[in-house]
Image (cartoon, rainbow, N blue to C red):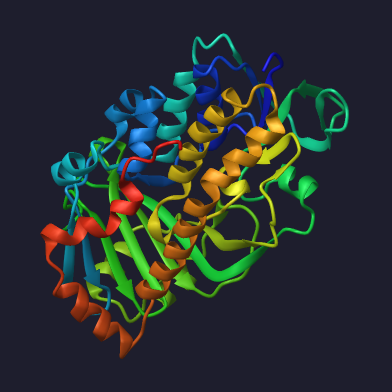
Length: 391
């Protein structure tokens, strides 16, 4: 492909796509709306499928110093505090899948990807570009910003997230629907936390219409806490001030240990959860979508970023093998990726339902989890964490 590819969005998916394209010898320009102000409050879990993909991009080494390797996922009942089951991670996951399970701040992952762009002559980055229009009818794909500036390329990749401007132009009938749940997040120093929050694990607590996740970040110095409850109101963005009183009210029936943790900080950030409907195709000619712009995933499986990174590698391979026909390459990319993305979306919705069960179904769920053998628990995730090959 003699002309450069355009990438709308300089988040995780957009930066990963740029690195993947450059490694295939394809020049690209990243068009990012913001000026990359650091968002420090969010943590992220990266399963072995994600870290393997980052290793293929040459980025894994850059993020490891700021990452943490949890030993396990420990599942507890949020009301009683009783431990239900353990999913081994650490060495067990790395030996089984050939890549580690990591937790870290999202900002540290983003910084690692930006570092991976350093010195790549085929990649340029333009910040402050608020995409407003796309013209894909001429010899070039022309993208215009709201200030009248333009960018031209052989194709356009919309990696601009949940509220994608590319998707809104390409497929105006697609719409985001409030999923009926609200998430909150905060971070705390780990040095004075009581058990079980000080443990080197991912903690997953299940409760009626609610659940809680926590895990170490910042190389283990901090604990990232995410609380999710059904209800709330639909709102744009994922960095809104959180209503601390509403959060505590959602968890009033929970064990004292969790309530004490939630009371430690009032500076919560909140975001509404959404599902995407009526998107018939990811691609339209020489324009395609990647990551959350194409297939947003509810957070119950911790796979949103992983899917975007996987997308970037498969998409770059399809473009490189597309013999100068981006439209055909995009069709192949969607054919390869859509079934996996759809399975992750379905599984994540099912996990959310299981996490939030009330009595008497919650008792049945807890009994099944308590009887599950730890040594066989990872097998249930082979389809997710195994190596994915480009066919």
